[in-house]
Length: 320
Image (cartoon, rainbow, N blue to C red; front, top):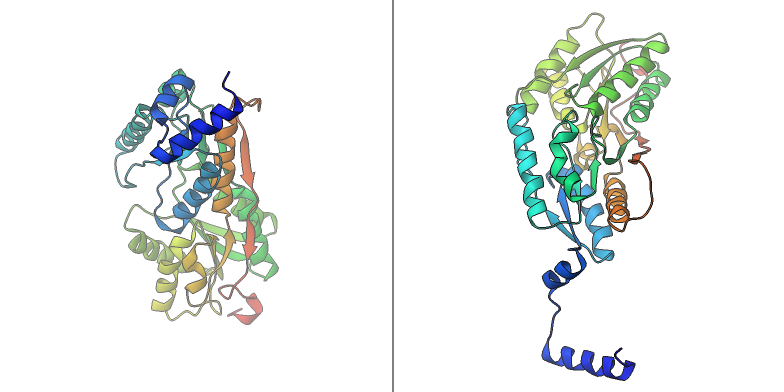
């Protein structure tokens, strides 16, 4: 055993010589690299805030986040998307990461898709999208609760003939929002027309489907959007018809991205705390890496918040 006096002298000499420990050698000795693979595209406000939350927790815990993601291409063949995601995961494993935090490309991949993670005993935590057939931890938003908040807000304003522009229903996230919104409206005696955004460019697809919604008879007095990105297209389609928001059409989104408050009028929306999702995911993967007993896969859904702005108004102030 090294005496305290000798330890202090050794550290002083090391500091004077500018010695830095060989972390790769430490990883070989301990079997832990202290690197966490993060496959979350930091694109746009949503992803960047989530990555910030992940980074905040990992660096404080003396872990290095290794960021690597597939290039988003929603128009690509599903098999190509899954293959690209798997290539990302395998690349992270090549760097001997201790755990992986993943924004999944496909909710419905089989457990076999991540067999190499399982074989190596590398913990997997998914964010925003829960893998339906994979034994992995998950941190996201209570999408059903958020959609109910949106529906109840419109109902409280007197809206009964409403519509929603849903995201791709193949994703559980969007399916949950759509189902909960429609159920809440119908249970209150209202009607709801639901359309899914087609696989066109986001703006063109949004305008196309918004026009279809506005052609419904009777025309809906309010529309719920699966995410805030759709708002610009809806606003443009309404303006082209001479409709004013919210006088002629109330609009409510989901996410509370940075641009939502900058629209004219500012967008009422359901706020997701994506930084908190990132923090909780990082905390969870670290607990798994340390072997803490937390049992079966964790399914953690954070409660969203309704943010009321000027894009929604009482039906009494509108056309009816």
